[in-house]
Amino acid sequence: MAAKLKPAPPATLVIFGATGDLARRLLVPAIANLCSDGLIGESLNILGIGSRDGGDEDLRAGLDEFAPQGDCWHKLRSRISYLQGDFTQPQVFEDLKARLGDGNVAFYLATPAQFFGPIIESLSKAGLMEETDGRFRRVAVEKPFGHDLPSARALNAQILAQVDETQVYRIDHFLGKETVQNIMVARFANPWIEAIWNNRYIDSVQITAAETVDVGTRGAFYDATGALRDMVPNHLFQLLAMVGMEPPNDLSADSVRTEKAKVLVAVREPSPAEARADSVRGQYDGYRKTADVAAKSDVETYVAVKLFVDTWRWAGVPFYLRTGKALKARDTEVVVTFKPVPLALFRDTQVADLPPNRLVMQLQPDEGISLDFMVKKPGPKVQAVPVALDFHYADRFKIGGRTGYETLLYDMMMGDQTLFQRADQIEAGWSAVQPFLDSWAKGKGKVERYKRGSDGPAGAAELLERDGRQWHEIGG
Ligand code: BG6
Image (cartoon, rainbow, N blue to C red; front, side):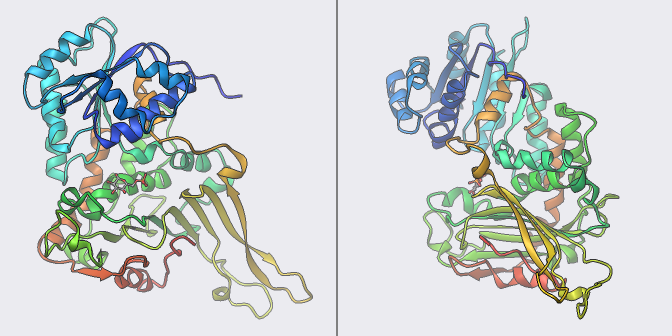
């Protein structure tokens, strides 16, 4: 039986940007869920900071809408308070100091990215990040962490000049997803998977994060960002690292993060010509009409890239990554295609007639794992046909009703950094995508239009066809 988890120690959670969407929809409901699980008790206080006028009751009323109702929320609600202030000015940090006292504090920066560095500097200058007398002072930083390699390096340098790496919790919310964490368990708790998890048996890997939603009201952010920066060096690379990592020596945060960083460092840097040939950019019809998007924007809302991971295990195995908005289905998945058998032994059968074995890890929606394998079709003739072994999380476990931030917030309170990005992982991620950004900045990498509700641009299919492969169907 699993060991019972300990409740988090007494602390204050300070949320910068407490009236924003992230805090209302995800963070505070996650705290309420942790409270119902008995993992955060009466000893957690929440202090929200925002620029709007108002008092404690206004903040609480704003949070009511998304919080899971019940006793827990009722009690937690009374321990929420509000501090109005402008976090570009020193005053709010003085006010904060007066309010906080000497206990444990976790600061959560749910603000636009340009404030991450300055807020941490101000917290540090006000003496609020000092960990003396056994108290912790930690800071969670949301994404985007930089917008390219130089800016991510600069942000890491700015933060680490003020606080220690052990105090920094860089969030990638994909790591809070149960099924993402399950990739590691599926690999390392099942010898038959791990035994064939290498370039002798694996032909190629596809990683997809397809969304049906469009850019909506996020035009200003998105038009300065694009699909690659928004999803690839962070979320998709978390999946790639989980799929590609070597077994860590133990499950300590640094052992796990070191193995993941090694995979990202091993992503081969494409030459300018390869970066051009191995990336596809798309934009859905109508994107340019979105509010706060440039009328002639050529920012991509879809991207597909082909990468290689130059390690002993993965040499020669292409990793195809794609993500996009306004596509035909919501589908986040990892698809591992195995190599063909060396010889088809069945009467009248060629190797080419046998569809390859395939393992599909479905991360959302309908979380589960499905393995295609070949069986004999009943009958006098020996004929091989593919069937699937299917596991759906929902058939076996109670899932849902979670925001995905529960584990992340609990781990932060407990001081476990395993599911947070270390500075070197972030930089390795940006470094691997930088050649694509550089090639596109030189005007290479034309943006193809695609229809809303489609599979994405035609070029993405060609990227695989060129190699004699096909994408797994989105939503299939
Ligand atoms: C965010 C991106 O980090 O992740 C969004 O900024 C994207 O553009 C989202 O929609 C996807 O997350 P999820 O959990 O909905 O798959």
